Image (cartoon, rainbow, N blue to C red):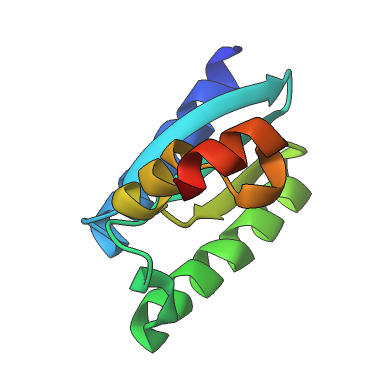
Length: 109
């Protein structure tokens, strides 16, 4: 990652942390002039708040201004956390249509 890209990423991250302090931010360089910043919400309903959406919208305008001014693109990606218990139980349980007839008969007993 080049120095200018790192400076832009740091600038975006510090501004995002000031606007959305409870969001975890993970930057990933994608090329010599682009990077993604994943904005990981603390809970699944986080992005439904109007104030939060307004803050993200303002940062979207900054994305465009940065691209036009510098030629560098910083892409902000909202991430919705998965519910741990639901995911674990879905993986643990096998749906009946995935079981063989022998497994299904054994489970029915």
